[in-house]
Length: 114
Length: 115
View 1 (cartoon, each protein chain N blue to C red):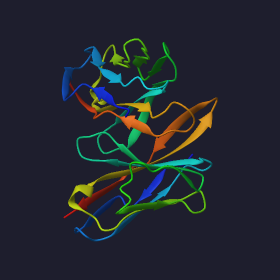
View 2: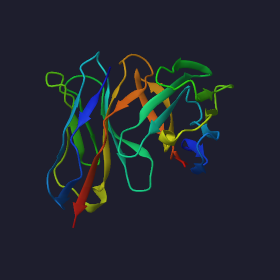
View 3: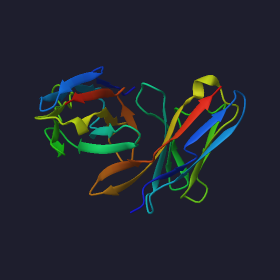
């Protein structure tokens, strides 16, 4: 079946550091890819998405590029802030056709220290 | 625009008891999902509805879990009888199609503790 693998946390960085959270997915079909974020005490929010190969999703300074050749969708940010502390989930559509459930990674807890 | 509403927010029950969760999706969203999120893991899809019909329930433990969306709007998820391993956050999401793309919006979840 489908799976998503993302780096284990927690990831602890200093403010203004460069962030990379790795994510790889199983290469079944042509799924859309997503990053969701869960801030402390809040629900899951869509951070960014990409729907086809070489697309780049971006939002709030975060970026991720859909790499079909490496089946990856790594999340990056050039300069993190304390307010970015949250749990980040990478996800893929289950089949890539029509309205579809999502398969999520286990989540990466990001801690930004001032 | 109001988001996805869920209730209750928290529930504590003893094993072998029954429990029900309610979800009201964003107005106009035809597709509704229930996910289970166990502590330390990502959400796992339980069931998908398109209007009032089930599209995918392959990961729903049907011996104890049931769900319905009778009028194609609100949905309920029931567990009967509950087991200890059902302790989790139950998330409801709804989605719409625009330009051939789907975006899922999640509710705040119901946190279930089975003792």
